[in-house]
Structure formats: C-alpha cells, structure tokens
Image (cartoon, rainbow, N blue to C red; front, side, top):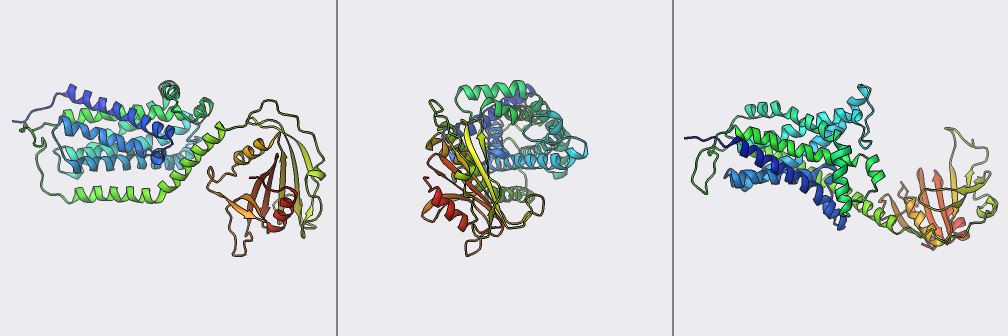
Length: 443
C-alpha cells in the first residue's frame, strides 16, 4: 500500500536545505576569496551556487527519501549548475534587448529594480524550470518527459517572483548579509562600492530564490506517494532503461564542459586580478609628511623638439588631483605629422605623452599599477625590455618587426615620475628611446 509523506515535514526539510544551500553558496566563495584560493572562479555566473544547491537538495532524497543513487545526485548537480548559468545568461540577454524596447535602462550593477525586472523575470523562470524538470525527472515516479515539462512549467513562474522579491530585499536582507561578511573580514569591496554595484541585491536574490525553490520542491514532493520499502532499498519504483535520461543529462554535461574550457581560464585570470588589486590598495604608500611638488615648465619636463617626422604641439602642465592619491603635477604633449589636423575624426597618426611628477618614488610606482599598467592586475598588459629598460605595454597587434599596426600604450616609473606614452598608428621605438634616455625606468 502506498503512503503519502508528511507534507509539513517534507516542506520543512527541503526549505531548510534551501537555506543551507543559500548560506553555503554565499559563504564558500567569500571564504575562498579571503584565503586567496583560485577555486572560487565560476562564482560570477552562479556556478558555485548551482553546484551547492544541487548537492544539498540531493541530500533530501538520499537521507530522507531513501533514493541512494550516486548517478542521480551527480545528474542533479550537473542540471542545477547549468540551470544557474543559463538563468544568468538568459537574464542578461533579455535585459540587453528587451529592457530598452520597454523603455527601461538595463544596468546589471546599479541596484535599480526597474532596469532589472526583465532579467529577473526571465532568469528566474528559466532557472526554476530547468531545476524543477531535472528533479522531477530524476526523483518522481513520473515517466513522461511531456508531463514532467508541463509540471515544471506550471511552477517555474514562482522562480521569477522569487527573483524580484529577492532583489527588492537588497537594502535590508542583502545589506545584513554583506555586513555579516564584513564583520568576518570576508568582503573585498568597500561598502560604498558594494552598494553602488548592487552586491547586497545579489546576496538577497540568492538567498530568497534558493529557500523559495526548496519550499516549491517540498510542495511538489509532499504530493508524491512513496512506496513503503525495506531499509536499504530505493523508495522510488524502478523504471525501465530510458535513453532520454542519459541523453538529456549528457547534453547538460557537455554544455558545462564547454563552459569550463571556454570561460573558466578567463574568469581565473579575472579573479586573480581582483585579488591583486585588493593587495595593491592595501599597499598604498603613506600620505604623511609629503613635501609639496614644485611647479616646473612643461617644456623642461617634456621633449619639445621633433622626434623623427613628428612635431610637438603646444605642451601643457598643471596640478592633478585624485581621490585615492595626493596632489601631483601632470605634463602633456602631442606629436603629429606636419599639416595634420589637430582634432576631429581625421586626425592622423600621432603620439600622446604624459609625464606625472609625484611626491616620491613609491607613489609613482603605485600609480603605475593604479593606471592599470600591472601584469598581475591586467592580463592585457605585459612587461618588456626596451633599450635596456623594463617597461609595461598594452598588448597590441604588432608585426614581426615589432611595429604597431594601430594603437598601443607603454608606461613606466622613473624615480618619482610616471611616464605614459600612447601611440596611434606610429612606430613606438623612436619615442621610447628618447623618453627612456630622459627618464630611465626604475621598475
């Protein structure tokens, strides 16, 4: 005789597991980030959230429903991970194309609800449908793909509602989570930057959505009758081999494999760059007892004679201001071909040189990295040796003769001075040689 599980117990257990998944998927990336581990890559697109949610939900069927199948648990983790990736991607795609059509400004990091309504609705429905379809197919007695899809679709709208509610709770629930992580020293971003980028909103969406999906799964499986079986056997009646299952989950595994091969290396470099920038900010030089920089003539700080076929235009200089750094003096000059327009769309090949004078050598070197000329923080730049000096240059399309095909920039610090040279369709060698003679690199 079939027995029906206690609805209250089923809903309570699965909603509690949803809470556990939400807490783990919030804490694990933060812990790994704080410890400098590269293993948190993928968390940008919810990969950790998907892994953890699928693994935690499978605990219910293993421990409470008696379905002790490793393949089913692995299948649920694969499906849950892919569901998060697809939900994130479909939400961004919908936001980019549908939000402007509806007169809404889409900005993923602004925290504004109006611009996020479409992404939240689309992503919430998509993610909920894939997870519900996978769980129902793996663990319910239902054998028809069509009925599984219909049942999952009937409840997938709840995922959209959960996403919107979660986003709205960003200033309260999300901020509380962010504050808790900050008290544990697990936050990299300052409070102002986190709020500006909508980080608390993403925390609250993750928590509300996973707890809500646990409740929905509890409702669905509280309605599913289970066979009373002896201990150690499965509570779901065995089904004949259905090639649709390995095909469906095999496609999911291939999709995840493509993601890992295609995107994880880039995310790994990006995450390493974030950690390097956090280290860079922590190592900011002291601003105490800095001497005032004397104003110098721009003609003295720059080379105002022709370099090759290029003539210097009028040089300029003045005091620079930065929120993160003390006052400094900046000098600029452009070199262009004789008779070339000085501005507008038809400006021909030219070179812009910027020389900054900082209070000391530590500040000049720190500002070099702050200007994104650090290979550890920016994989688009690399160090090279030019004319016996180590400098940092942006990667550009260069020929075998090491000449530029379009544009590039190079930079280095020289004592308390920072030199940045931007080339537009110009061979850099003559300019680099002249300025390295005037300002030898000290990096």
